[in-house]
Image (cartoon, rainbow, N blue to C red; front, side, top):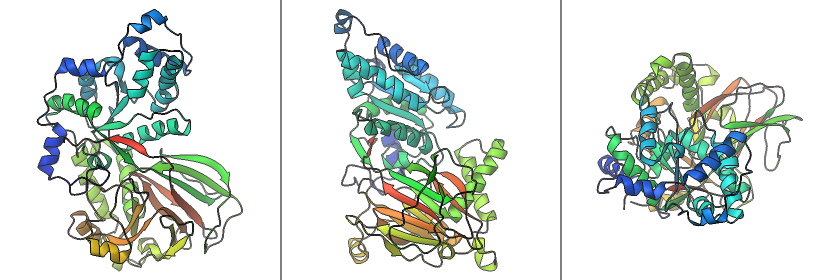
Length: 475
C-alpha cells in the first residue's frame, strides 16, 4: 500500500519484499553509466571544498570559454557517511562509495560538518551560478544528497538543509538514506529498508541509482521549544540548542505557577517526541553505552542491552512500588492541543494508567513498530481522527501503560492508547514530588529538571516548510 502522498504506508510491504525492494532487485546498474550520471566536475568539487575549508563562499570565477565546454552532470549526488554507524562496516562502505562516484563526492561526517557544506559549499555553487556559470547552476539545481547513517544522522542533514528554505536559497536538495542505525524508522518510512543488506557490496550501486532517479516525498518537521524556570541546570542532547532567557506564552488555560524568568531551548524532530518511562529507559541505556561502549558494538547487541535495561527500570512491576516517580504521568502532566485549522488551545485528559506519552509523526516507531495501528474508517470517524500521513500537518498522540502493555503494542497484538491528533501541542509539567522528568526526541533522551514551585512548558509546532526525501520503493 502506498499512502495518499506517495509515501510507503505502515503495512505496505512484507519484510521479504522490503528487503528485495531495498536491494533494488530487478535494477541493472552499469558502474560507468552511474558514474557518468552523478559525477560533478572536478573544478566545482574543488571550489566547494575550498569554500568549506576557508568558511567563506567567495570564489574565483572561471573563464567563460572554459565553462562553456563543460557538461553538467545529469544527476549530481553528494554522499555523507557516518563512519561511527553500522559497526565496522562504516569505513568500508565509505571506501566503496568513493570507488563508485569519486572521493570528492563522498564526505565523512567526522571531518565535514553538513552545516558548513550548506553555508559555504552550496553557496559557492550559487556564486558561480550568478556569475553565468551554467554548469554550476544546473549542478546546484539538480543536486541530491545521500546519507549513510542512522535516523539521527539523517535528521542532522535535514535540519542543515532546512536552513536553505529559511534563507530563501532554494531549491533544497532531497535526501536518500543508507540505513546504518539501530531503529532506522525514518529509513523504513520512505522505503529505504530496516538495515543495509549483508550483501551490501552489490546493493550500493542500486541504492545510488534509486537515490538519483526516485520520486520525491514530503515530510512534516516539528519545532520544539522548552521553557523551564531559570536557575535549573541540565545537559542538553545534541539536537537541542540554547536560546537563553525568554518569556512564556500564557495563552490558554495554565494550571501551575509561571516563573518570572524562564530559560529556553529548542530543536526540531522528524519522527517523535516522548515523555515518561520510555524516555527514562532510553536515557539509562545511552548513559550505559557511553560508560561501557564495548557492550554496544552493533544493532543486535544494542537491542539486547536495551531490552534488559527496560526490565531493570521497573516498567513491568509498577503496582508494587510506591515511589511517585514510577506512577502514571497524570500526576505531573497536563496536555493542551490545537486541532487542525484552529487557533484555540484545548485541554485533553491524560489517562491515569499511562506512563509514557508519545507524539508521533511517522508511521514507524521503535524499530519499525506501528503503535498507532491501521485504524478502521468507522473508528476514525467515531474518534474524530483522520488517516495518519507524514505530511498532513498532524501528530498522533498515544500512551503506553505498563511494560506488559508496551510489549504487546510493540509486537502489534494491540494498538497503543489513542489520545489525540493535533496540529500543535503544549505539555505543562509540574514538579511536586517529582524532581525530574525524562524526555526524548528522535532517539536523543535527556533528563528534564522540574521545579516544585513553577511549571515547565514544552510547546510543539509544525515548521512552516516540509523536508524532502527520495522515495526508496522500486516501482
